Length: 460
Image 1: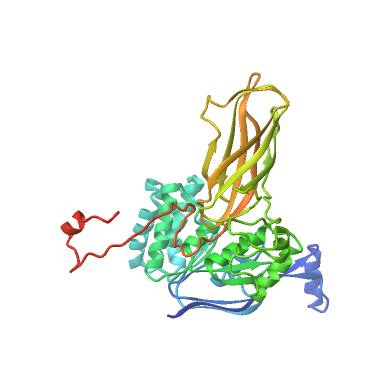
Image 2: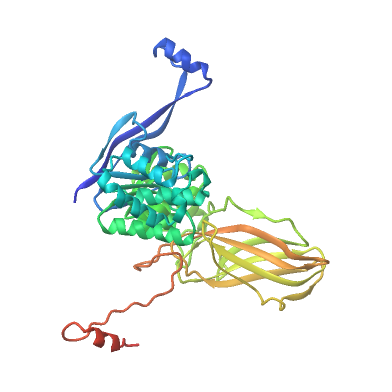
Protein backbone atom coordinates (compact mmCIF):
# COMPACT_ATOMS: atom_id res chain seq x y z
CA UNK A 1 0.00 0.00 0.00
CA UNK A 2 1.54 3.30 -1.09
CA UNK A 3 1.92 6.42 1.02
CA UNK A 4 -0.24 9.25 -0.36
CA UNK A 5 0.52 11.97 2.21
CA UNK A 6 3.75 12.23 4.20
CA UNK A 7 4.29 15.05 6.69
CA UNK A 8 7.78 15.29 8.20
CA UNK A 9 8.74 17.60 11.10
CA UNK A 10 6.23 20.22 9.94
CA UNK A 11 6.23 23.58 11.76
CA UNK A 12 4.71 26.97 11.02
CA UNK A 13 5.77 30.18 12.75
CA UNK A 14 4.12 33.61 12.41
CA UNK A 15 5.69 36.94 13.30
CA UNK A 16 3.32 38.95 15.48
CA UNK A 17 3.94 42.71 15.61
CA UNK A 18 2.63 44.96 18.37
CA UNK A 19 2.11 47.86 15.91
CA UNK A 20 2.22 48.28 12.09
CA UNK A 21 5.28 50.54 12.33
CA UNK A 22 7.26 47.63 13.80
CA UNK A 23 7.07 45.90 10.42
CA UNK A 24 8.88 48.87 8.86
CA UNK A 25 11.48 48.90 11.63
CA UNK A 26 12.09 45.18 11.12
CA UNK A 27 12.63 45.70 7.38
CA UNK A 28 15.00 48.64 7.94
CA UNK A 29 17.19 46.79 10.47
CA UNK A 30 17.46 43.81 8.06
CA UNK A 31 16.87 41.40 10.91
CA UNK A 32 19.63 42.71 13.21
CA UNK A 33 17.01 43.52 15.83
CA UNK A 34 13.72 41.76 16.50
CA UNK A 35 10.53 43.85 16.64
CA UNK A 36 8.15 40.92 16.72
CA UNK A 37 7.31 37.91 18.83
CA UNK A 38 7.09 34.41 17.43
CA UNK A 39 3.85 32.45 17.39
CA UNK A 40 4.22 28.79 16.48
CA UNK A 41 0.90 27.64 15.04
CA UNK A 42 2.38 24.17 14.48
CA UNK A 43 5.46 22.49 15.94
CA UNK A 44 7.19 19.34 14.71
CA UNK A 45 4.22 17.43 13.26
CA UNK A 46 4.98 14.11 11.53
CA UNK A 47 2.64 11.43 10.15
CA UNK A 48 1.84 9.55 6.96
CA UNK A 49 -1.40 8.45 5.29
CA UNK A 50 -1.76 5.34 3.17
CA UNK A 51 -3.81 5.04 -0.01
CA UNK A 52 -7.49 4.54 0.77
CA UNK A 53 -7.23 5.74 4.39
CA UNK A 54 -9.44 8.40 5.94
CA UNK A 55 -7.71 10.34 8.70
CA UNK A 56 -9.60 12.56 11.14
CA UNK A 57 -7.98 15.55 12.83
CA UNK A 58 -9.53 16.75 16.09
CA UNK A 59 -8.65 19.56 18.46
CA UNK A 60 -10.09 22.70 20.02
CA UNK A 61 -10.26 26.01 18.15
CA UNK A 62 -6.74 27.38 17.71
CA UNK A 63 -5.06 23.99 17.98
CA UNK A 64 -3.58 24.22 14.45
CA UNK A 65 -5.97 21.99 12.47
CA UNK A 66 -6.73 24.44 9.65
CA UNK A 67 -3.09 25.56 9.49
CA UNK A 68 -2.06 21.93 9.00
CA UNK A 69 -4.54 21.47 6.15
CA UNK A 70 -3.39 24.69 4.48
CA UNK A 71 0.21 23.51 4.66
CA UNK A 72 -0.74 20.14 3.16
CA UNK A 73 -2.60 21.80 0.28
CA UNK A 74 0.17 24.34 -0.37
CA UNK A 75 -1.87 27.40 0.59
CA UNK A 76 0.77 28.12 3.25
CA UNK A 77 4.54 27.57 3.16
CA UNK A 78 6.05 25.70 6.13
CA UNK A 79 8.66 27.39 8.31
CA UNK A 80 10.30 24.03 8.97
CA UNK A 81 9.64 20.58 7.58
CA UNK A 82 8.21 19.08 4.42
CA UNK A 83 4.97 17.75 2.93
CA UNK A 84 5.06 15.10 0.21
CA UNK A 85 1.92 14.33 -1.80
CA UNK A 86 1.57 11.38 -4.13
CA UNK A 87 -1.49 12.32 -6.18
CA UNK A 88 -3.89 15.05 -7.26
CA UNK A 89 -5.45 17.01 -4.40
CA UNK A 90 -8.91 18.59 -4.05
CA UNK A 91 -9.57 20.75 -1.00
CA UNK A 92 -12.84 21.68 0.69
CA UNK A 93 -11.55 24.48 2.90
CA UNK A 94 -13.56 27.71 2.56
CA UNK A 95 -16.35 26.73 0.20
CA UNK A 96 -17.04 29.33 -2.45
CA UNK A 97 -14.08 31.52 -1.48
CA UNK A 98 -12.71 31.42 -5.03
CA UNK A 99 -15.96 32.34 -6.79
CA UNK A 100 -16.41 35.74 -8.45
CA UNK A 101 -19.87 36.95 -7.35
CA UNK A 102 -20.31 39.01 -10.54
CA UNK A 103 -19.94 35.93 -12.78
CA UNK A 104 -22.43 33.13 -13.31
CA UNK A 105 -22.05 29.68 -11.84
CA UNK A 106 -21.14 28.32 -15.27
CA UNK A 107 -18.45 30.97 -15.77
CA UNK A 108 -16.97 30.32 -12.31
CA UNK A 109 -16.77 26.59 -12.99
CA UNK A 110 -15.03 27.31 -16.30
CA UNK A 111 -12.47 29.65 -14.68
CA UNK A 112 -11.74 27.19 -11.83
CA UNK A 113 -11.32 24.36 -14.32
CA UNK A 114 -8.88 26.44 -16.39
CA UNK A 115 -6.85 27.36 -13.31
CA UNK A 116 -6.65 23.69 -12.34
CA UNK A 117 -5.51 22.70 -15.80
CA UNK A 118 -8.65 20.82 -16.89
CA UNK A 119 -8.44 20.27 -20.64
CA UNK A 120 -11.26 21.55 -22.82
CA UNK A 121 -12.32 18.07 -23.89
CA UNK A 122 -12.74 17.06 -20.21
CA UNK A 123 -14.55 20.22 -19.19
CA UNK A 124 -17.98 19.24 -20.54
CA UNK A 125 -18.00 16.05 -18.46
CA UNK A 126 -16.81 17.95 -15.37
CA UNK A 127 -19.52 20.57 -15.84
CA UNK A 128 -22.30 17.99 -16.21
CA UNK A 129 -21.18 16.13 -13.08
CA UNK A 130 -21.00 19.39 -11.11
CA UNK A 131 -24.41 20.57 -12.29
CA UNK A 132 -26.05 17.22 -11.50
CA UNK A 133 -24.50 17.10 -8.01
CA UNK A 134 -25.28 20.75 -7.08
CA UNK A 135 -28.87 20.51 -8.42
CA UNK A 136 -29.40 24.28 -8.62
CA UNK A 137 -31.20 24.21 -11.97
CA UNK A 138 -31.36 27.39 -14.04
CA UNK A 139 -29.45 29.34 -11.40
CA UNK A 140 -26.26 27.97 -12.98
CA UNK A 141 -26.52 30.81 -15.53
CA UNK A 142 -27.25 33.52 -12.93
CA UNK A 143 -24.59 35.63 -11.18
CA UNK A 144 -23.32 33.98 -8.01
CA UNK A 145 -24.18 37.14 -6.04
CA UNK A 146 -27.87 36.28 -6.57
CA UNK A 147 -27.45 32.85 -4.94
CA UNK A 148 -28.50 32.09 -1.42
CA UNK A 149 -25.61 31.08 0.87
CA UNK A 150 -26.76 27.48 0.65
CA UNK A 151 -26.74 27.47 -3.14
CA UNK A 152 -23.23 28.92 -3.25
CA UNK A 153 -21.71 26.25 -1.01
CA UNK A 154 -23.64 23.52 -2.85
CA UNK A 155 -22.04 24.58 -6.11
CA UNK A 156 -18.57 24.84 -4.54
CA UNK A 157 -18.85 21.42 -2.90
CA UNK A 158 -20.18 19.87 -6.11
CA UNK A 159 -17.25 21.29 -8.10
CA UNK A 160 -14.62 19.94 -5.72
CA UNK A 161 -16.25 16.51 -5.57
CA UNK A 162 -16.42 16.37 -9.39
CA UNK A 163 -12.74 17.22 -9.95
CA UNK A 164 -10.32 14.36 -10.68
CA UNK A 165 -8.44 13.65 -7.44
CA UNK A 166 -6.74 11.01 -5.36
CA UNK A 167 -6.47 13.02 -2.13
CA UNK A 168 -9.38 14.96 -0.61
CA UNK A 169 -8.89 17.57 2.13
CA UNK A 170 -12.05 18.48 4.08
CA UNK A 171 -12.16 21.24 6.71
CA UNK A 172 -15.57 21.48 8.45
CA UNK A 173 -17.27 21.60 5.05
CA UNK A 174 -19.92 18.88 5.37
CA UNK A 175 -22.65 20.90 7.08
CA UNK A 176 -23.79 22.38 3.79
CA UNK A 177 -27.25 22.66 2.30
CA UNK A 178 -30.37 20.91 3.50
CA UNK A 179 -30.60 17.43 5.01
CA UNK A 180 -31.06 15.75 1.62
CA UNK A 181 -27.94 17.42 0.19
CA UNK A 182 -25.89 16.60 3.29
CA UNK A 183 -26.76 12.93 2.84
CA UNK A 184 -25.68 13.28 -0.79
CA UNK A 185 -22.33 14.70 0.35
CA UNK A 186 -21.70 11.79 2.70
CA UNK A 187 -22.62 9.31 -0.01
CA UNK A 188 -20.10 10.99 -2.35
CA UNK A 189 -17.40 10.69 0.32
CA UNK A 190 -18.21 7.01 0.81
CA UNK A 191 -17.95 6.44 -2.94
CA UNK A 192 -14.60 8.25 -3.02
CA UNK A 193 -13.30 6.05 -0.19
CA UNK A 194 -14.66 2.89 -1.81
CA UNK A 195 -12.71 3.73 -4.97
CA UNK A 196 -9.44 3.98 -3.05
CA UNK A 197 -9.44 7.73 -2.38
CA UNK A 198 -7.46 9.16 0.53
CA UNK A 199 -9.19 11.70 2.80
CA UNK A 200 -7.96 14.11 5.47
CA UNK A 201 -10.95 15.23 7.48
CA UNK A 202 -11.23 17.95 10.14
CA UNK A 203 -14.38 18.27 12.22
CA UNK A 204 -15.57 19.14 15.72
CA UNK A 205 -18.32 16.52 15.37
CA UNK A 206 -16.80 13.58 17.25
CA UNK A 207 -19.42 11.08 16.10
CA UNK A 208 -18.80 12.06 12.47
CA UNK A 209 -15.05 11.57 12.84
CA UNK A 210 -15.53 8.14 14.41
CA UNK A 211 -17.99 7.14 11.70
CA UNK A 212 -15.94 8.30 8.70
CA UNK A 213 -12.30 7.86 9.74
CA UNK A 214 -9.89 4.96 10.10
CA UNK A 215 -7.38 6.80 12.31
CA UNK A 216 -7.31 10.13 14.13
CA UNK A 217 -4.80 12.80 15.11
CA UNK A 218 -5.37 14.93 18.22
CA UNK A 219 -3.79 18.41 18.07
CA UNK A 220 -3.48 20.93 20.87
CA UNK A 221 -1.57 24.23 20.86
CA UNK A 222 0.05 23.29 17.57
CA UNK A 223 1.43 19.98 18.82
CA UNK A 224 0.48 16.39 18.00
CA UNK A 225 -0.81 15.01 21.30
CA UNK A 226 -1.96 11.58 20.20
CA UNK A 227 -2.34 9.56 17.01
CA UNK A 228 -3.84 6.14 16.52
CA UNK A 229 -7.10 4.23 16.35
CA UNK A 230 -9.98 6.61 15.88
CA UNK A 231 -12.25 5.88 18.85
CA UNK A 232 -9.65 6.08 21.66
CA UNK A 233 -8.12 9.26 20.25
CA UNK A 234 -11.48 11.02 19.88
CA UNK A 235 -12.60 9.93 23.34
CA UNK A 236 -9.39 11.24 24.88
CA UNK A 237 -9.89 14.54 23.05
CA UNK A 238 -13.44 14.80 24.42
CA UNK A 239 -12.27 14.08 27.94
CA UNK A 240 -9.43 16.62 27.59
CA UNK A 241 -11.93 19.35 26.66
CA UNK A 242 -13.75 19.07 29.99
CA UNK A 243 -10.65 19.01 32.17
CA UNK A 244 -9.24 21.90 34.16
CA UNK A 245 -5.69 22.55 35.29
CA UNK A 246 -3.64 20.85 36.63
CA UNK A 247 -5.39 17.63 35.47
CA UNK A 248 -5.42 18.87 31.85
CA UNK A 249 -1.64 19.42 31.67
CA UNK A 250 -0.92 16.06 33.29
CA UNK A 251 -3.32 14.22 31.00
CA UNK A 252 -1.91 16.03 27.96
CA UNK A 253 1.65 15.06 28.83
CA UNK A 254 0.63 11.46 29.48
CA UNK A 255 -0.96 11.31 26.04
CA UNK A 256 2.17 12.69 24.39
CA UNK A 257 4.33 10.17 26.23
CA UNK A 258 1.95 7.34 25.39
CA UNK A 259 1.27 6.53 29.04
CA UNK A 260 -2.38 7.65 29.13
CA UNK A 261 -5.23 5.10 28.89
CA UNK A 262 -6.15 3.87 25.43
CA UNK A 263 -9.69 5.19 25.75
CA UNK A 264 -11.00 8.16 27.68
CA UNK A 265 -13.54 6.12 29.61
CA UNK A 266 -11.21 3.21 30.33
CA UNK A 267 -9.60 4.76 33.39
CA UNK A 268 -9.75 8.06 35.19
CA UNK A 269 -6.71 10.28 35.82
CA UNK A 270 -5.26 9.77 39.28
CA UNK A 271 -6.83 12.94 40.72
CA UNK A 272 -10.27 11.99 39.51
CA UNK A 273 -9.94 8.30 40.39
CA UNK A 274 -9.02 9.15 43.95
CA UNK A 275 -12.08 11.35 44.22
CA UNK A 276 -14.29 8.58 42.87
CA UNK A 277 -13.18 5.81 45.19
CA UNK A 278 -10.45 3.23 45.51
CA UNK A 279 -11.92 0.74 43.07
CA UNK A 280 -13.48 1.10 39.65
CA UNK A 281 -17.19 0.22 39.73
CA UNK A 282 -18.78 -1.93 37.05
CA UNK A 283 -21.88 0.26 36.74
CA UNK A 284 -20.19 3.65 36.23
CA UNK A 285 -17.88 6.24 37.73
CA UNK A 286 -17.92 9.89 38.74
CA UNK A 287 -15.34 12.30 37.24
CA UNK A 288 -15.35 15.69 39.01
CA UNK A 289 -13.95 17.49 35.96
CA UNK A 290 -16.89 16.47 33.76
CA UNK A 291 -19.04 19.62 33.88
CA UNK A 292 -20.84 21.38 31.01
CA UNK A 293 -19.57 24.80 29.98
CA UNK A 294 -22.75 25.52 28.02
CA UNK A 295 -25.28 25.51 30.86
CA UNK A 296 -28.16 27.98 30.53
CA UNK A 297 -30.54 28.60 33.46
CA UNK A 298 -33.85 30.19 32.40
CA UNK A 299 -35.37 32.88 34.66
CA UNK A 300 -37.70 31.42 37.26
CA UNK A 301 -41.42 31.70 36.58
CA UNK A 302 -42.52 30.38 39.97
CA UNK A 303 -40.24 27.36 40.39
CA UNK A 304 -36.56 26.56 40.76
CA UNK A 305 -34.54 23.46 39.80
CA UNK A 306 -31.62 22.25 41.90
CA UNK A 307 -29.46 19.22 42.72
CA UNK A 308 -29.49 17.64 39.25
CA UNK A 309 -27.59 14.36 39.11
CA UNK A 310 -27.43 10.91 37.55
CA UNK A 311 -27.52 7.98 39.95
CA UNK A 312 -27.12 4.24 39.72
CA UNK A 313 -30.11 2.24 40.91
CA UNK A 314 -28.19 1.82 44.17
CA UNK A 315 -28.16 5.61 44.60
CA UNK A 316 -24.50 6.33 43.75
CA UNK A 317 -23.89 9.56 41.75
CA UNK A 318 -22.10 8.92 38.43
CA UNK A 319 -21.41 10.73 35.16
CA UNK A 320 -19.43 8.07 33.27
CA UNK A 321 -22.05 5.52 32.26
CA UNK A 322 -21.84 1.94 31.02
CA UNK A 323 -23.94 0.92 28.00
CA UNK A 324 -27.14 -1.04 28.80
CA UNK A 325 -27.09 -0.29 32.53
CA UNK A 326 -30.10 1.36 34.18
CA UNK A 327 -29.73 4.81 35.78
CA UNK A 328 -31.86 7.57 37.27
CA UNK A 329 -31.73 11.22 36.19
CA UNK A 330 -32.85 13.14 39.28
CA UNK A 331 -33.49 16.75 40.21
CA UNK A 332 -35.38 18.72 42.87
CA UNK A 333 -37.98 21.41 42.19
CA UNK A 334 -39.03 24.07 44.72
CA UNK A 335 -42.21 26.10 44.01
CA UNK A 336 -42.44 29.73 45.15
CA UNK A 337 -45.92 30.54 43.82
CA UNK A 338 -49.27 28.87 43.16
CA UNK A 339 -48.94 26.75 40.01
CA UNK A 340 -51.16 24.29 38.20
CA UNK A 341 -51.07 21.61 35.48
CA UNK A 342 -47.40 21.00 36.23
CA UNK A 343 -45.28 18.59 34.20
CA UNK A 344 -41.67 17.59 34.91
CA UNK A 345 -39.56 16.71 31.88
CA UNK A 346 -36.10 15.85 30.59
CA UNK A 347 -34.28 15.62 27.24
CA UNK A 348 -30.98 14.03 26.17
CA UNK A 349 -29.02 15.77 23.38
CA UNK A 350 -25.73 15.23 21.62
CA UNK A 351 -22.99 17.86 21.28
CA UNK A 352 -24.59 19.42 18.19
CA UNK A 353 -27.92 19.89 19.99
CA UNK A 354 -29.78 17.07 18.27
CA UNK A 355 -32.53 15.79 20.56
CA UNK A 356 -31.98 12.06 20.98
CA UNK A 357 -34.83 11.40 23.38
CA UNK A 358 -36.95 12.90 26.11
CA UNK A 359 -40.08 12.45 28.19
CA UNK A 360 -42.31 14.00 30.84
CA UNK A 361 -43.51 12.45 34.07
CA UNK A 362 -47.09 12.41 32.80
CA UNK A 363 -49.10 13.01 29.65
CA UNK A 364 -50.34 16.57 28.93
CA UNK A 365 -53.38 17.30 31.07
CA UNK A 366 -52.47 14.59 33.59
CA UNK A 367 -49.78 16.45 35.51
CA UNK A 368 -49.94 17.97 38.99
CA UNK A 369 -53.18 19.96 38.96
CA UNK A 370 -52.50 22.18 41.99
CA UNK A 371 -49.09 22.98 43.46
CA UNK A 372 -49.09 25.49 46.35
CA UNK A 373 -46.06 27.67 47.17
CA UNK A 374 -43.51 26.00 49.44
CA UNK A 375 -43.96 22.62 47.73
CA UNK A 376 -40.82 20.63 46.91
CA UNK A 377 -40.81 17.73 44.47
CA UNK A 378 -38.16 15.04 44.06
CA UNK A 379 -38.17 14.08 40.37
CA UNK A 380 -36.53 10.96 38.93
CA UNK A 381 -36.46 9.47 35.42
CA UNK A 382 -35.16 5.91 35.23
CA UNK A 383 -33.57 5.08 31.87
CA UNK A 384 -31.28 2.64 30.07
CA UNK A 385 -27.94 3.94 28.77
CA UNK A 386 -28.53 2.79 25.19
CA UNK A 387 -26.25 5.49 23.74
CA UNK A 388 -22.94 4.73 22.11
CA UNK A 389 -19.58 6.09 23.18
CA UNK A 390 -19.38 9.88 23.42
CA UNK A 391 -20.49 12.94 25.38
CA UNK A 392 -24.20 13.66 25.89
CA UNK A 393 -26.08 16.50 27.57
CA UNK A 394 -29.07 16.27 29.91
CA UNK A 395 -31.70 19.01 29.98
CA UNK A 396 -34.53 19.40 32.47
CA UNK A 397 -37.60 21.60 32.68
CA UNK A 398 -40.87 22.19 34.47
CA UNK A 399 -43.91 23.42 32.56
CA UNK A 400 -47.25 24.57 33.90
CA UNK A 401 -49.50 27.56 34.56
CA UNK A 402 -49.08 30.50 36.92
CA UNK A 403 -51.94 32.97 36.69
CA UNK A 404 -52.25 33.96 33.01
CA UNK A 405 -48.82 32.58 32.20
CA UNK A 406 -48.37 29.11 30.70
CA UNK A 407 -44.99 27.72 29.72
CA UNK A 408 -41.71 26.87 31.41
CA UNK A 409 -41.84 27.53 35.13
CA UNK A 410 -38.17 26.52 35.38
CA UNK A 411 -35.68 25.20 32.84
CA UNK A 412 -31.98 24.35 32.71
CA UNK A 413 -30.29 23.59 29.38
CA UNK A 414 -27.21 21.33 29.59
CA UNK A 415 -27.62 20.88 33.31
CA UNK A 416 -25.32 17.81 33.17
CA UNK A 417 -22.91 16.16 30.76
CA UNK A 418 -22.34 12.41 30.83
CA UNK A 419 -19.85 10.23 29.04
CA UNK A 420 -20.79 6.84 27.65
CA UNK A 421 -17.99 4.31 27.64
CA UNK A 422 -17.15 2.21 24.63
CA UNK A 423 -19.23 -1.00 24.60
CA UNK A 424 -17.05 -4.07 24.94
CA UNK A 425 -16.65 -6.36 21.93
CA UNK A 426 -19.58 -4.92 19.97
CA UNK A 427 -19.51 -3.62 16.41
CA UNK A 428 -22.09 -0.81 16.49
CA UNK A 429 -22.18 2.67 14.97
CA UNK A 430 -24.17 5.88 15.31
CA UNK A 431 -25.59 7.45 18.50
CA UNK A 432 -28.08 4.83 19.66
CA UNK A 433 -27.45 1.18 20.45
CA UNK A 434 -30.58 -0.60 19.29
CA UNK A 435 -29.37 -3.84 20.89
CA UNK A 436 -29.21 -5.57 17.53
CA UNK A 437 -29.13 -9.35 17.57
CA UNK A 438 -27.46 -10.21 14.25
CA UNK A 439 -27.24 -13.75 12.98
CA UNK A 440 -26.11 -15.36 9.75
CA UNK A 441 -27.37 -18.84 8.96
CA UNK A 442 -25.64 -21.01 6.40
CA UNK A 443 -27.97 -23.34 4.61
CA UNK A 444 -26.54 -26.76 3.79
CA UNK A 445 -25.43 -27.49 0.23
CA UNK A 446 -24.77 -25.05 -2.60
CA UNK A 447 -25.56 -21.34 -2.55
CA UNK A 448 -29.27 -20.63 -2.51
CA UNK A 449 -31.01 -19.40 -5.62
CA UNK A 450 -33.04 -16.23 -5.51
CA UNK A 451 -36.39 -18.02 -5.07
CA UNK A 452 -35.09 -20.39 -2.37
CA UNK A 453 -33.40 -17.56 -0.49
CA UNK A 454 -36.56 -15.50 -0.54
CA UNK A 455 -38.60 -18.35 0.92
CA UNK A 456 -36.11 -19.46 3.59
CA UNK A 457 -36.62 -18.39 7.20
CA UNK A 458 -34.27 -17.78 10.11
CA UNK A 459 -34.59 -19.67 13.37
CA UNK A 460 -36.08 -17.70 16.23
